[in-house]
Image 1 (cartoon, rainbow, N blue to C red):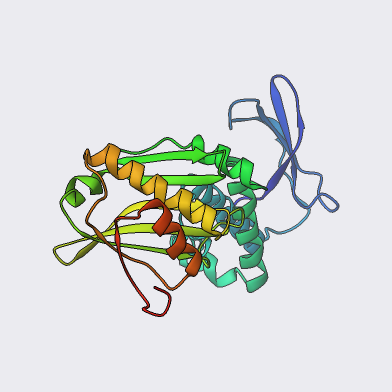
Image 2 (cartoon, rainbow, N blue to C red; image 1 turned 180 degrees about the vertical axis):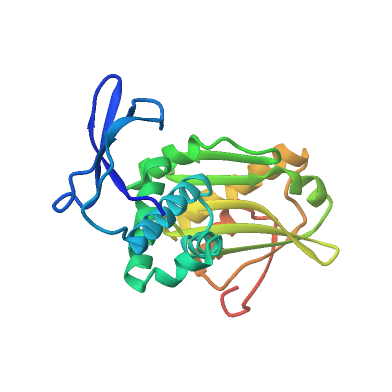
Length: 259
């Protein structure tokens, strides 16, 4: 097991590395600026190797590289996976080291991930900049502050279907929006997501805009109007009133008290 060195100075052609035990050891090595080959140096150390420190550092660097590469993987899973590569190292890493490694992975990911939006406008701009995949349209309605995600492939199946559902979720909504509103179609026992809307509120006017977006999208994707269909909603009065304004010929199904 080798010693651990830290970068001290960088010049145009070389890098000077000093032993990590800076107060107690004067060992230094010099490498090329773009090469790991040792050019010269003093490798006589005044202390024993700190095996735990070296193994923890090696594990931390491996986890940081993996976290930057696999940005969707959970840090805990990365840590366990990398630790299993060397069973002896995991035995020397304590809970405090584990916490430091997880924080290091988080900071490393912040370097490669886009900046988190701090307000609704920034979120809509970021949404507009996402490269859409096949069968998906992503756009932003800046005038109404609504984010739109359309599953275009689903409309081919739903053109002649008559049963649809719409509902919102507040728990999973991004902080910049009030809720995620989803339109779902029913076909042969399967529920197929058709459109997701990031809504700024839950007023009648917002729901009118949301249902109009769905109606216009249905027309543009299928070539037919959203007529003689059945739409199931939750018990929210604003959503029911907004639907009646935007989709007056649609049959609504839900709580009889609110209808």
